[in-house]
Image (cartoon, rainbow, N blue to C red):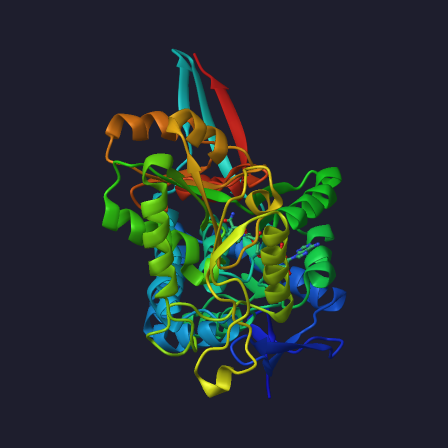
Length: 482
Ligand code: NAD
């Protein structure tokens, strides 16, 4: 059975203590590889390697850093088919999603920040005729990037690329649930000529090596993407040591459908928003709010579309719904569906575990795409992040009610708005409490824009140069001259 390795000081290294964790394939439930269960000794080695690499990497020209990132981007592109397959096996997502979303976007992240490195600049302010302020931006040193399992390589690269571009050395920790693509990526780093110690990748559990990384005195900043409860724990650990923090957390995002929407485009868009990656994207629209005058017609068409989706072997290119990521996560999702029933929700389709046709997937972790209606905004189903293929449908009565229902959660990550009334779209975009509002689209991304949410969906997240600035220490120089 394949054993994955950490990536420390440019080498693939087994865990010092020799402990491993099993890594199952969600589509079959079978263990297919093992990952290091890293500990403090591995972390000390990684931090020492990163500290040793920092002087040269931070002093290297922007061009040099850009070239390393570009080579990595190209290697990810050249190995896209292999990486997409690996991610589909590791995560349970349809290979078509890995091949068209995750891997191309991972390569684009590296490409974007390679270019940004060469364009990064600091500010200067002519205060008056004889005073000038300018700001130096020093990279912080050794920083931590901790990423989740739902878009493994895409979100891992989204975090490490700006940190590296800004001249930092990185301790990366991918999710223990989906370690494979980060491991394959560490092999590509070797091929790309990444200088030893600049990027180090440690595998293992969140409460174990993850928490140790957060607590390590050598780590100057933490960029984290994951659940809100984990984010709160990390924030509590980092606060007394004044570590810089960027937290990209959970969501409970509304899709708002108005009677004047473009019908086909809206059906297709809200379906994709609800069920892409089995609903396991932080940005998924898990609450579909529909204007009352078209509610029943939209609901019936939506049910028809959901029932037509194929749940199947993730490695089959025609599968649109793969497995959910783990047995524990499947149980959590099924528990949420039970809760919805107890709360008085009516299950319109799906509602339980399902077995796809492929024989090898007999014991895999598959949940039928599920639609529920009849629940008010305050119930748990409409408040808590389920993070699975479960969408709740509710009617609204006018813009004011739509905004009130949309904003009635602790989260504020994303919203999508479906209407042909331009005035309304602008009006509502201002009122929605969400870090990202999509109008007549979903999940389109421009890497220059801030990424992340309001309220309990996170803090300190940014895009473009701001993502690089997060990984720097500003120092202002004020000069008075005669
Ligand atoms: P998670 O919080 O369980 O784990 C995320 C990462 O943190 C993993 O690598 C895990 O090992 C690590 N971790 C766990 N406990 C830790 C600790 N105490 N100290 C340090 N690291 C620790 O999240 P998950 O289940 O992997 O991912 C799903 C969640 O991520 C969902 O809530 C989803 O909404 C959120 N998410 C948010 C975004 C965003 O951009 N806002 C993107 C993707 C996913």
